[in-house]
Image (cartoon, rainbow, N blue to C red; front, top):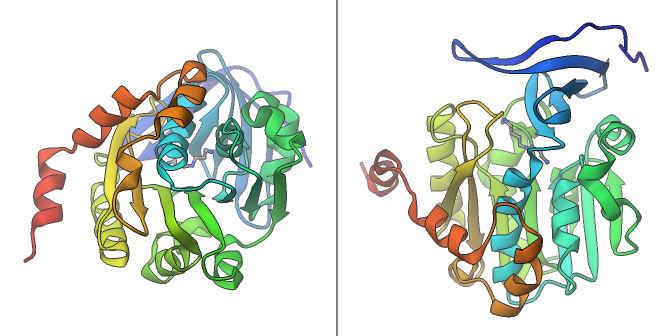
Length: 289
Ligand code: SPD
């Protein structure tokens, strides 16, 4: 490990398509793992944060925008939530939000990069929070695509994909074969959720991802929100289910148990976020040509 704690404050940017998305702060650790360059920063605005290959992943004071949107539509909508699988999610934020649901009995998290887990635990402990020591939490450092391929049919109630952008180690989390395997391992009443990129900064990737999930599950719905430090700030998560769009209607008891502890998510916010499909996406999704 080569912690870089001698840097002076400056701007740390993700640069994409001629635009820079930056935070003012200091790089406190940086190392290239077998999979990617892992960077930990300390920022003035959002506290400590994580970049992978120069792309923003999370930060202490902004992670809830992302993790609440990814988790609660799925966990409030699935018929049962005893067994949950998280692919990626090495900072622990997705697992933490899942485990706030008392009905979860067993959560497998499969993260490919052990350095992301180690540094998240060391530098960003509030993001995983109590998930890291929760007896229901089971971490495997390994290949999530292989895990899904080898899992028994109908073995999970909820499958959540919390990967990075579709380049490098996360590329295989955006293709038909992977989505088909995710569907195969869901139980009846099960829900699938994935981050599905920005409708602005990754317009075509976003549209292609939603279309593909619709083909595999027969339906799927993107939900729109904000992660201000990500490219354009405008982000999406896409949901599908084995037996129809049950993720659109949060079960009252589950929602009431988690909503008071949320910063962004509520049943009302979720309704609006599912409705907020931009016109150009709606046209692209209905275009059969
Ligand atoms: N462009 C950023 C996409 C990042 C998605 N995953 C973030 C990890 C947060 N747990």
